Length: 380
Image (cartoon, rainbow, N blue to C red):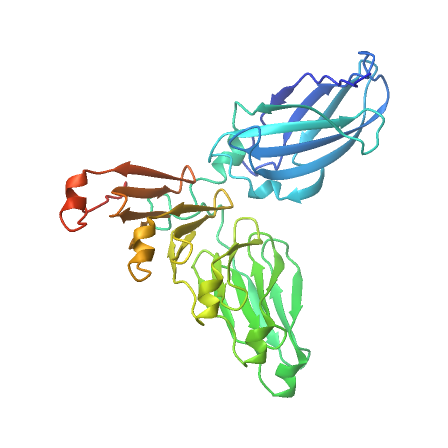
């Protein structure tokens, strides 16, 4: 007999003014294969938060071990379980619909069965308020809501070979070691510090190290050993809010550090660049980054809010005309370009995290592939 577990869902939003709680309550009744409540039993629950749809990107997963009451009822706080993947604090509740996927093992083990995925109809208010639009540093609301300004202190101990940071968030010192080769040469790595974030490249070990002011911890991204073998390092494209991009031309990947969740994300580009000892040029706007892959004929955008790379293909005619590419413009985390061969204007909307297009009249195409001018105006 196929086992079926039914859950009755009741979600309530946690509100607070002094501090935003990282979680919201969830109640369910667990039933066994016979349709009877699992009374006074130990059950395991796995919760996943999905983006946009029931089959959307998994933003966060956690597990809970709970004991039911005499009616089979369990109570738990989503966001306060044992993390499996993602970061609950990094979920942007204001961007796109969110869906909750629930899996359960009524025997208390890890043999989970999917019992349903439902849209979260009421966005957790306090958590949304704590993450008002972070995509635009020039917007009226600012690029982030700072509940209270703070200062992180750091120093380099060249004899111990470590960078020390005192986090104002955690109130403790943490360190990141760098290669002894620096000490042996009586030098230290160069430090970049912006908006509470500390960044340095270990040119001997081939790693980029970032201390995130939000998470209060270090995060590391290795790059190709070919840089080290050639006695050079990749260039960092860092923003004042702490998001950082660098392009690894030997591994032909663009790496972005997302300052909101403290993790790295990468996007591979065509090996044609590496074969020609070149790399695509990146553009930054707000907290987002873009680059054009002229060999694959795509414009890529990394959106800090949705934590996703999204691409938009452009006409092969650019490629046939000496690998030309469309010009990409940006404003407040949004990106746009005009495909004069396909006669479309493409816009990447940072709020929705998607590309949208609008076709224009073929008359432009017939007149030497000209195109209308795309302008913009910023909201206050």
